[in-house]
Image (cartoon, rainbow, N blue to C red; front, side, top):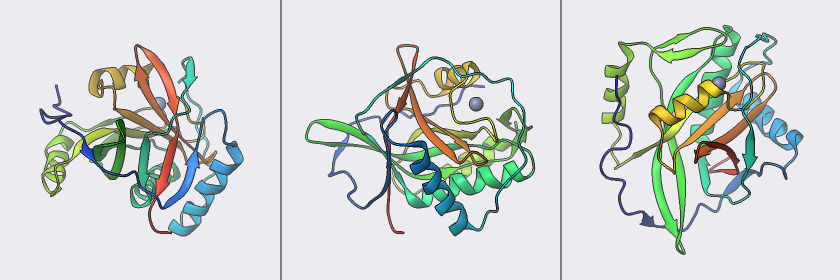
Length: 218
Ligand SMILES: [Zn+2]
């Protein structure tokens, strides 16, 4: 099944100043893992998701990953909360989570950047080590996308690695290449057990971990 992800309208980026109310920033190779874990546990406490003990083994192995230090991905707090909530609830059941990132492309002083405003997800066929949308989930998923009132762009996707840390595996790379192959597309990988949330792009067949900033109201 081919899914038209980006639409024809990737398009002129709107000129707009990047969000300023930054609540958390993570720069791979620079920020500490504990800062990310503190951020995750702060949100999980707020959301009332308990500590999850349910660690699952996985065959997924990390591909060679490079780091980028330039920040051009901003994620709204409400979207981060939805992602963490979804990944936590599924992890409690011993399952992986998956969804799409909805947002827009902007530009400021000749530099492009992406903002994730919200997420959508659908009925999943999930196990502890794999996840995909159920065949009948797509209609529902596209209905949800239809309800979004602004001119959105699918920025990418998120999924969880419950208990086996945040990285891109070769299967994840394949998914990204197949479904999200534009240069602005991102992948968020969340481990709600080890409290990790990392963001990646695929560029020239290379996996690149990129910085992200979370913004919005506390
Ligand atoms: Zn994965």
